[in-house]
Length: 119
Image 1 (cartoon, helix red, strand yellow):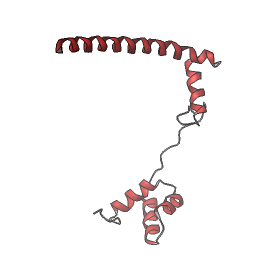
Image 2 (cartoon, rainbow, N blue to C red):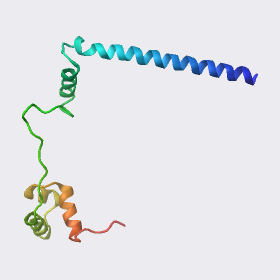
Image 3 (tube, rainbow, N blue to C red):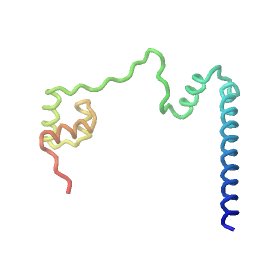
């Protein structure tokens, strides 16, 4: 009895493997036809269209548009952050006023010893 079950299990595994292979092949054929089906000339153009339709998340930037550069945090900015902290401003207010990110503000505060340790 046990050997029959083992044989049935092996046969079922073989069926599953064949089915997975057939699904992968069919999916590949269907995906390959999508750009033409929606009027795109190539895969790159199709992917840009999909990104744009997804609300711009991960969308390619138009040609000529450069990526935003990181903010350079100078000693003057650090000093300004510390002054604003002592003036009682919130992290978000400081970040906006100085033109840096909230994590940068928090890092400056931490380095200056102005944050409390978590318990």
